[in-house]
Amino acid sequence: MKIVITSYGKDLESKMDKSFGRAKWFILVDTEGDTFEAHSNEQNFNAAQGAGIQAAQNVANLGAEAVLTGNVGPNAFRTLNAAAIRIFIVKGDVTAERALAEWKEGKLQETTESTIEGHWA
Image 1: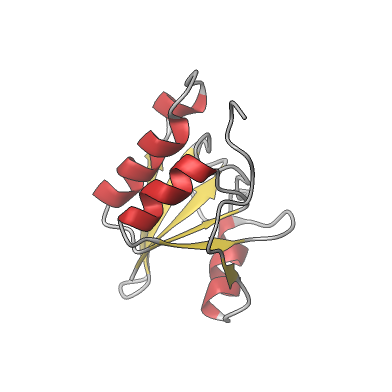
Image 2: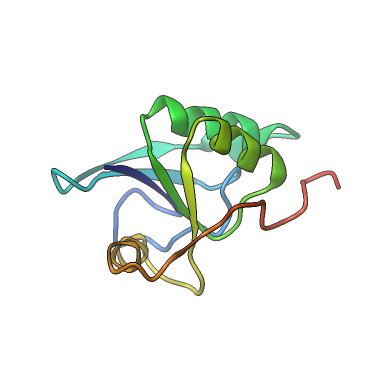
Protein backbone atom coordinates (compact mmCIF):
# COMPACT_ATOMS: atom_id res chain seq x y z
CA MET A 1 0.00 0.00 0.00
CA LYS A 2 1.20 3.50 -0.77
CA ILE A 3 0.77 6.06 2.00
CA VAL A 4 1.62 9.76 2.02
CA ILE A 5 2.74 11.35 5.29
CA THR A 6 2.88 15.13 5.55
CA SER A 7 6.29 16.18 6.82
CA TYR A 8 8.63 19.10 7.51
CA GLY A 9 11.56 17.15 6.06
CA LYS A 10 12.62 14.57 3.52
CA ASP A 11 12.90 11.47 5.69
CA LEU A 12 10.94 9.41 8.18
CA GLU A 13 12.83 10.90 11.13
CA SER A 14 11.44 14.34 10.25
CA LYS A 15 8.67 15.89 12.29
CA MET A 16 5.25 15.33 10.80
CA ASP A 17 3.63 18.46 9.34
CA LYS A 18 0.10 18.95 10.74
CA SER A 19 -1.05 20.75 7.59
CA PHE A 20 -2.02 18.85 4.46
CA GLY A 21 -2.33 21.41 1.66
CA ARG A 22 0.57 23.55 2.83
CA ALA A 23 2.83 20.77 4.10
CA LYS A 24 6.47 21.24 3.14
CA TRP A 25 6.98 17.62 2.07
CA PHE A 26 5.00 14.52 1.21
CA ILE A 27 6.76 11.30 2.15
CA LEU A 28 5.41 8.49 -0.01
CA VAL A 29 5.82 5.16 1.77
CA ASP A 30 5.38 1.81 0.03
CA THR A 31 4.43 -0.45 2.93
CA GLU A 32 4.89 -3.62 0.87
CA GLY A 33 8.48 -2.85 -0.06
CA ASP A 34 9.31 -0.84 3.06
CA THR A 35 10.64 1.98 0.88
CA PHE A 36 9.95 5.70 0.85
CA GLU A 37 10.63 8.76 -1.26
CA ALA A 38 10.13 12.45 -0.52
CA HIS A 39 8.21 14.82 -2.77
CA SER A 40 8.36 18.57 -2.29
CA ASN A 41 5.08 20.45 -1.91
CA GLU A 42 6.84 23.81 -2.25
CA GLN A 43 4.56 25.03 -5.04
CA ASN A 44 1.61 24.87 -2.62
CA PHE A 45 3.38 25.96 0.57
CA ASN A 46 3.02 29.65 -0.26
CA ALA A 47 0.03 29.44 -2.61
CA ALA A 48 -2.47 32.25 -2.24
CA GLN A 49 -5.34 29.81 -2.76
CA GLY A 50 -6.09 26.33 -4.06
CA ALA A 51 -3.26 24.68 -2.10
CA GLY A 52 -5.43 21.87 -0.76
CA ILE A 53 -6.92 20.92 -4.12
CA GLN A 54 -3.56 20.98 -5.91
CA ALA A 55 -1.83 19.07 -3.11
CA ALA A 56 -4.57 16.43 -3.18
CA GLN A 57 -4.23 16.08 -6.95
CA ASN A 58 -0.47 15.67 -6.58
CA VAL A 59 -0.96 12.98 -3.93
CA ALA A 60 -3.42 11.16 -6.21
CA ASN A 61 -0.89 11.34 -9.06
CA LEU A 62 1.67 9.66 -6.78
CA GLY A 63 -0.67 6.68 -6.50
CA ALA A 64 -1.31 7.11 -2.79
CA GLU A 65 -4.09 5.08 -1.22
CA ALA A 66 -4.01 6.85 2.16
CA VAL A 67 -2.78 10.08 3.77
CA LEU A 68 -1.51 10.55 7.33
CA THR A 69 -1.78 14.19 8.41
CA GLY A 70 -2.86 16.42 11.26
CA ASN A 71 -5.61 18.36 9.47
CA VAL A 72 -7.34 18.46 6.12
CA GLY A 73 -9.50 21.29 4.79
CA PRO A 74 -12.78 20.89 2.93
CA ASN A 75 -11.44 21.28 -0.62
CA ALA A 76 -8.56 18.88 -0.05
CA PHE A 77 -10.92 16.44 1.66
CA ARG A 78 -13.34 16.46 -1.29
CA THR A 79 -10.51 15.99 -3.79
CA LEU A 80 -8.89 13.15 -1.83
CA ASN A 81 -12.27 11.54 -1.26
CA ALA A 82 -13.08 11.71 -5.00
CA ALA A 83 -9.78 9.89 -5.67
CA ALA A 84 -10.72 7.20 -3.08
CA ILE A 85 -7.75 8.17 -0.88
CA ARG A 86 -8.36 7.46 2.80
CA ILE A 87 -7.37 10.14 5.34
CA PHE A 88 -6.07 9.32 8.81
CA ILE A 89 -5.59 12.00 11.46
CA VAL A 90 -2.44 11.98 13.59
CA LYS A 91 -2.54 13.66 17.00
CA GLY A 92 0.43 15.19 18.81
CA ASP A 93 3.91 16.15 17.70
CA VAL A 94 5.41 13.01 16.24
CA THR A 95 7.85 12.03 13.55
CA ALA A 96 6.67 10.68 10.22
CA GLU A 97 8.06 7.31 11.30
CA ARG A 98 5.97 7.33 14.50
CA ALA A 99 2.84 8.33 12.53
CA LEU A 100 3.42 5.37 10.21
CA ALA A 101 3.89 3.04 13.19
CA GLU A 102 0.64 4.27 14.73
CA TRP A 103 -1.16 3.62 11.43
CA LYS A 104 0.29 0.10 11.22
CA GLU A 105 -0.83 -0.53 14.83
CA GLY A 106 -4.38 0.57 13.97
CA LYS A 107 -4.24 3.54 16.35
CA LEU A 108 -5.19 6.26 13.87
CA GLN A 109 -8.75 7.36 13.24
CA GLU A 110 -9.93 7.69 9.65
CA THR A 111 -11.81 10.94 9.05
CA THR A 112 -15.01 11.15 7.05
CA GLU A 113 -15.01 14.95 6.85
CA SER A 114 -12.66 17.91 6.79
CA THR A 115 -11.08 18.70 10.14
CA ILE A 116 -10.66 22.46 9.67
CA GLU A 117 -12.44 25.25 7.85
CA GLY A 118 -11.20 26.33 4.45
CA HIS A 119 -8.32 28.78 4.21
CA TRP A 120 -10.65 31.60 3.14
CA ALA A 121 -13.62 30.71 5.36
